[in-house]
Amino acid sequence: MVAVRLYLSGERADSQLSRKLGKQAERVRTAARGAAQDALDFAMTRAKSDLQSQGRLGAKYVDELQGKISEGGGNIRVAITNDEPGFDFLQTGGTAKGRPYMWIPVNNSGVSASEYEGRLFQVKRKNGGTPLLMDAGTRAVAYVGVETVEIKKKFNTQEIVEEAAERLPEFYKARFASLAVE
Image 1 (cartoon, rainbow, N blue to C red):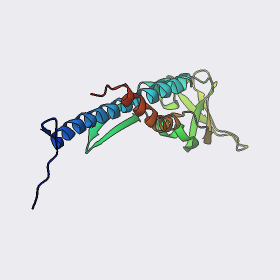
Image 2 (cartoon, helix red, strand yellow):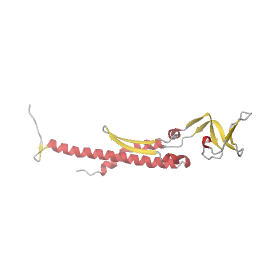
Image 3 (cartoon, one colour):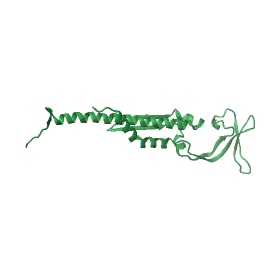
Image 4 (spheres, rainbow, N blue to C red):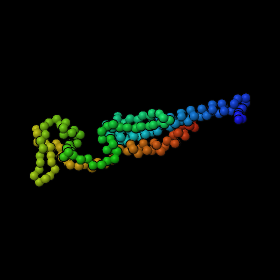
């Protein structure tokens, strides 16, 4: 067997190649990490703005919006989550069903019937009309009972994350170009 070795300027060429590739590999990893951070920043900024645009409804979801970058197995993972109950439902919209009723506050207070300060009593109407919960002290209608409510899609976080993913090559290209070649 014959071994062939290449030398360039007195040094084995494979050593020079390994060193150059090692530097490029680090450049690729650094650019990928930076692109992941850019995608996360883009998505979080836009998603928070989208949630805040929903006023009082979206405000409670802003603080629970979390973003995280992790690495392992040769992959970089960008995760955006929101653990606030109802978030996923408001991403798509749909039909909310009562058990048997959902009690909607008449004064738009946002206070659930179970957390109401005063005593309530239910009025079942003879003509089969909408059931009511009334305040025992004032005899005023406090809540209206409904069996189902159609909720429109409120949040666009999924679309924003998809846009960030589509822009990932752009983020990577900019990061890679910004790193000096040695």
